[in-house]
Length: 47
Image (cartoon, rainbow, N blue to C red):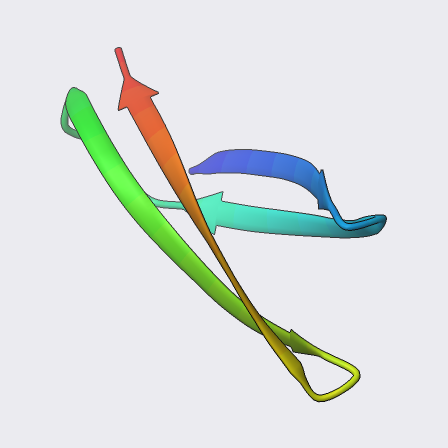
């Protein structure tokens, strides 16, 4: 299990990923803060 901690717009977010295969992955995060929908795209490389 891989833990990714990041800060987006001054909010601390923690993601847990269960990726076992090596490769490149894209993850799109959608979250709502104060009724504002925010989308972020992450590129993840698993070695």
